[in-house]
Length: 488
Image (tube, rainbow, N blue to C red; front, side, top):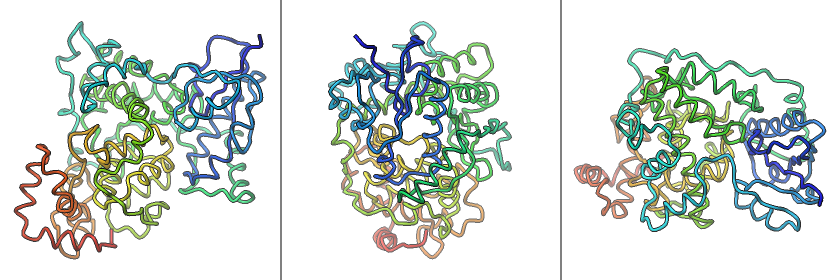
């Protein structure tokens, strides 16, 4: 019986997606139709294609890389493939006459374990899953107790930026050197735009993220030595001159499959065990990977295809063209302009900028959650449907009605003022909810609560905000003014 080729999708490019079989042949496919159907960030397209071509070069004669319009046109014989990360890809594999689908790799908790944990629960809360995963995999555990005596160090990891600083002063990761493959990919994307009518959003630029397992390992080592020790306290803070802060920048590498997440969290734990990094920061980092990353992957499959169309708050407005097309030039709000500019120029900002600036804006403005999730998946270098559907539908936009979170992630300008240095010099005042200088986030927050008062009436975590809303004599006027706002 002929040995089946291993088909590697573009997010399955690390060594853990191949077994120790030096003669196993590998299939890699570039589908132009994917880029024809949706408009992606130019740097995301470059990253994915460069990673595919670098993996083909590493494998040499073992690999065949095919550029075609459709994936199925490249599959002409028996193949086996690790469970893919999208429903569309899974249905494609199931439709092929001679394809074998292997269990998923690139995540830590097995699907069956998640289902056994989730079944029968009215809410699938991250904290509950995370504790179960810590116990199951023995990560940051001292016997049956959590390392450091607490499961959760969030309270230590929510400090605003230090006063009077413009950066945290943390060493940035070393720049990556582009090579001939990167140049070939850039020329290829230019041809697609010129000859095939394929369009992109965002700006081209130097490659900022790893495309090989070696590059990803070097980035991981640098983070563990230089950034993990100071990661925790300010992981939710924002500084306009320090877009990276102490974040790992490993999400793109993890989501391309270049790093094994279990190896990453075990190595982070090792830094704590040898006294090189404090428990609060290590726990916060482990929570992001063993906790949140695995959690959203499993929620994507567990909730099923209807989840991406949930719209519990009946948010039906379209994304404005300036936002959808990454055009920040007319934006006056300092935080929004800076964050949108960085997405345009790099395809990346950290999680609080995504959640509390971009997502917060979309939630307050009643933009359609499915459109918001699709935008995040296309505009970010680490964005994929499995990542962004639960993150946006369930968390950021509260469109599932509270299945994943206990309250909406809405906040006014006071939060941004406390957690950043954006508000100084901004034409809008975070303390003002009315008038020409009313902060879009402050006024938008009260308008959002006014508009959805009935939906939140039974939520005990919204009792205090709604009580404050009731004290505002001008709540109706604010809501009316914000419905007409065009100046952000």
